[in-house]
Image 1 (cartoon, rainbow, N blue to C red):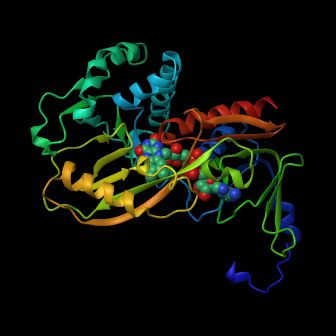
Image 2 (image 1 turned 90 degrees about the vertical axis):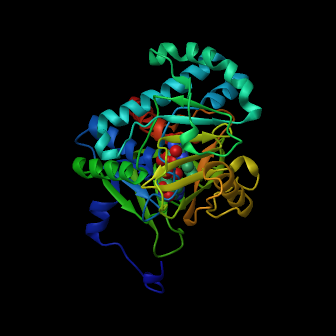
Image 3 (image 1 turned 135 degrees about the vertical axis):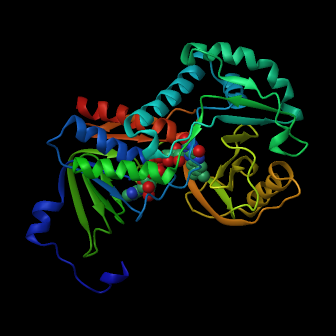
Length: 384
Ligand SMILES: Cc1cc2nc3c(=O)[nH]c(=O)nc-3n(C[C@H](O)[C@H](O)[C@H](O)COP(=O)(O)OP(=O)(O)OC[C@H]3O[C@@H](n4cnc5c(N)ncnc54)[C@H](O)[C@@H]3O)c2cc1C
């Protein structure tokens, strides 16, 4: 706001007439917000649709993630089976898998830089007994995939992982994409459809009865009030500042990227470790390594971006002992992103009042379920 300091900004007749009222306003310009705007506009081509994003770029999780196009590793699914009935676990996996197929089908693999290189889970001594469950999980998932999802990799010596790795489970249905290209594809589709996306606009207050969105402090001369027939709240981890009663908690995730390595990385695909809490992949012959939130759940329950030094050290030790033993690559970049979690892994997709709906709490699988979650929200918004 430095630009406008001590200036009194008054909206003009033209601005008031043309810029403040819409048929649908979406709050939040991540995967879910943009996908909601697109699917609504496709169903209602004559409607006016606006997306309001507080950051210059999406500033939550959608461009901060690892770009895994995944639906759950073997140990992650086994973990879920310990707490959820089989049909619920199946429904979660199916939604993620269908979601991945849906975005690939809609945007095309090239636009997303989708690579179907498979998923791999590193198994340590403690997890070896979980391999006994592999056939059971494959049988369970067969109705969705038609064939076996998980298999043991016979020979992984060429990957040169450290001695802690006792086995590797391969998943031939997983892939990886470029998270920036995914958002780029969403932006381009918004532009084709004439969906307006305004960035750098934070919604400070939401009046669900009057369907008004207040930008700025009501006593400040810089306050804008947008109004819409319908509102979609797609603010994921940041929802509680607008709607304090929603049942979700933020969870920060850390990602490190190495300098380009002077040797060719002998593997590709998306790799999971420690029940999916740690993940890594090969991007442009650099290591992308992330996760480790389980080391400090409490400390990472925050909406503030930042680096937790103990998690950073933990990830570095995994890099130096497990992924590239004895090689110690240098880290060039690091960042964090904020996810939203709840008591179970399902997102919140519901109407808050007539005309005001919400799709949030995407957990760590928004690449897979974001598009479909948006579709579910659009269906609800259309019923009103
Ligand atoms: C480190 C990390 C790694 C991940 N890896 C993967 C992965 O490999 N695969 C996968 O499937 N998922 C992954 N995820 C999860 C995935 O990125 C999310 O589930 C997904 O991006 C959620 O999308 P969203 O649109 O709901 O939320 P977000 O991307 O957070 O979008 C919400 C947007 O709302 C905006 N906003 C918030 N409040 C306001 C306001 N008041 N006014 C205006 N705008 C507002 C925010 O700036 C933000 O851009 C990862 C997440 C992180 C953080």
